[in-house]
Length: 396
Image 1 (cartoon, rainbow, N blue to C red):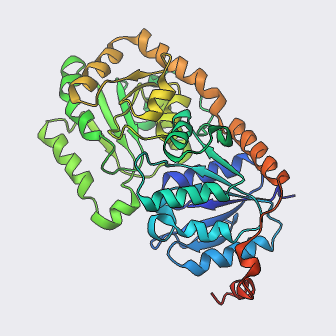
Image 2: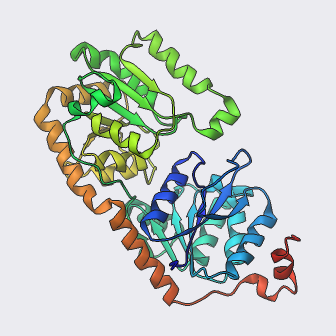
Image 3: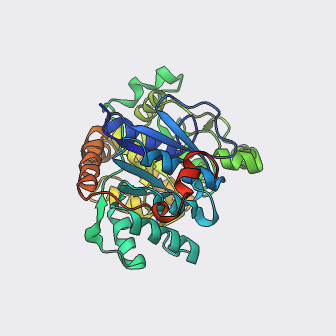
């Protein structure tokens, strides 16, 4: 019997972090139903759990699907919020959708801007106001909602980003499965695009290789589909040319594909050091960092908000800046110091046990049931003579 949980977000085979997160969260909570937010270049086929799709830029789809959910056995709707995946200015179509629903809404915020535009503030405040519960993935995000948006922190649920249950193993025992050298591997992964800071790591690698000649850096992941649609592979080409200019073609490797969960786990367990050199200090969540901790990696990171929180108490190495010099010094130290590297990895691994998907799924189920117990909502469509029926008939 279905639990009555409906998840609304991008969804595989769409290639984005929120799609992956939604699939994993939905799978961890029971027998979910999915409403896929469908971008203009989205996939034509979805798995069977996708019962509805909303074309991102078609307003009538939001009302049509809300009407369908209101007339189903859905008990709670879990919404993943990121401005770019919803239609309208600053993703304002999300407000049309939640206003039309009659069951409780639980919203998970993947972005909380520190300096929101008026439109971003209006959308985020409207979504929180319409939600029976609001979930963020870090203390820093909850504090930001209190400081910037005046949302009482007591009304916010903090649930960590879920991670796979990976084994803690010796990296060199895994590298042959990937055809990689048994030598110090530094890894970054995620959809490729500007703003990740990979240039700084590439520029650090000459000093790293001078000190540790066998070390190499792997950048794992396909180019972000939105960037690919707008600019093609111009950004990846720029990085490749930087590598060539520095004479690092045999020390910096690009794995240009969107990997499966299983293959990603193999790459993570094969790595010796994981690096997130993100320049945006306000970043409140990083699934890549969370995944690296789940594999027991020694993490080197710039001090963005999520990394500061996750890597405190000796669970990783935080840099004062993302300069190539600072990165080179830290990476070199960890390559040379096996004991320190293993100590950081073990602390990260132990901390991440509370973040594995079964634990996170159980916490979300409790939030969903609490929202259900609070009772139904009133749809704004209820008093708009005939609109709901027209939506249900596909006329809007």
